[in-house]
Amino acid sequence: MEQVFEFAGNNILLVGGFVAVLGLLVWTEVMRKVQGLIELTPVQAVPWINDPNAVIIDISPVAEFNKGHIVSARNLQASRLAKPDAEIEKLKDSKLLVVCKSGQSAVAAAGSLKKMGAEQVAVLKGGMAQWRSEQFPVTTK
Image (cartoon, rainbow, N blue to C red):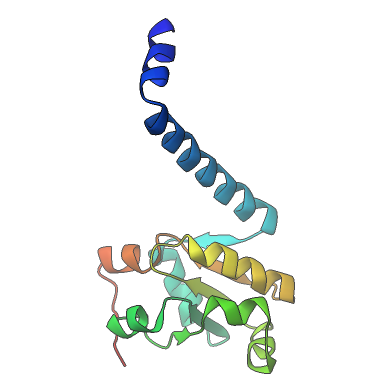
């Protein structure tokens, strides 16, 4: 135990960074549970996406979205979800799958949709990185 304290004392920045990352991960997981968000793997997301009442919201920056996205995904900036307009208000009765690059930013966006009154909101676990990793189709159109 003494060695742990010695290591921490000699590597304050490293230990501080570790604690910060660990805290962020814990906070993200707690927020997912508190907000009642559903987290879907790419395999689990396919039936959700195939539902005619489902809407895929990709909150990636436009340049990232144009490099490749899930077929029929709509690119909406997260800032629009914080103060929803009439177009976004119409979406709250749909099944919503929120997608981003890695899955982390989508949690906050999904939380905004839940606050707006959307009941069926899910986040793509691992985001587009995981979607591509599992070789699911993407489009640039």
